[in-house]
Image (tube, rainbow, N blue to C red; front, side, top):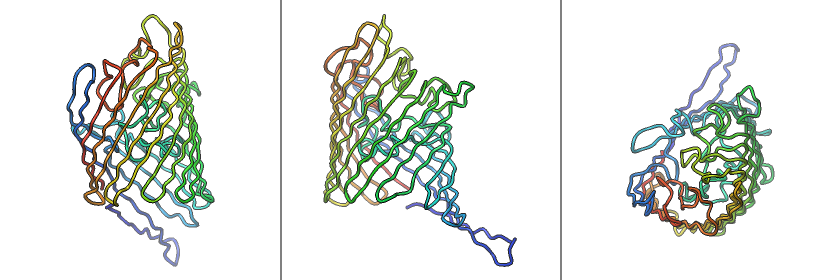
Length: 383
């Protein structure tokens, strides 16, 4: 249950007192479990791991009523690792979110700071990983950021109010560099809801993501370090009774990529003796969830990913198959147990780089073969 602190501010400047209502909410998630990976760099791994179905976090969010439907708002959200106590998101105190802004009941919301992009705000909720499953169900290397591997720093964002079931918004993230376009990003998207129907789409572009330590997508944030990133996609979900079914498509294009944030070393994705001109992914996902009781659901996901590895030595086209299953049981409104299993297989052409091994986001290292299996048993507590 969220804890709320309510404060009343009284102005003495008028004969009759004027009351402005404000609130601050403390909230959080602690997600902790045991993971088994059958092949992580050549060996089986059993490990305690934090923040998979949801990132472990705590945060503060607040609002002040300014009158006439206008509100001042803020949110500060910290990510952390349960096992070590370390800060997540590159060691940032409030690495998940940190923003302040104004919200109007009629005209929408404008916020400033470190924030989600439009793919996360709109498109991601039509995927399993962006809705109910989390990290392990992310598309390969989270190439489309639907699992929110990075946020936008220095961002100005607008979100519309709901208009007949439709919402839209966009964000622009400054590079904060003397070269205006060096590590900037922008995105926009929208969604439509009607009963059990949800339709969403979004676009994101970043110039030189990972190229700076203070821009829109910094070096320790970027999923891929590249000259340019473009991602777009759309999805649809439909809920009827206890069942929800969905389909999502995303297209990710990286120009002159030089590295991958998951793999660490800058040249890890480039085949020896070649130059990587472009790396392209298309992700086709079908997912479903069935709520057997208010306390218990089971979900499944299948993702077919095509990869174009366009190098100076030629173009290769691997195919990646990912299957995920999850069951979740709530002990209470705040505490649940869940089990997840993911299988990934890389087929088709070889790139002769580290990308040839299967690699499920959340594992310690890519598989030394084309297959990888991960199983997780975890407890999650929300406050």
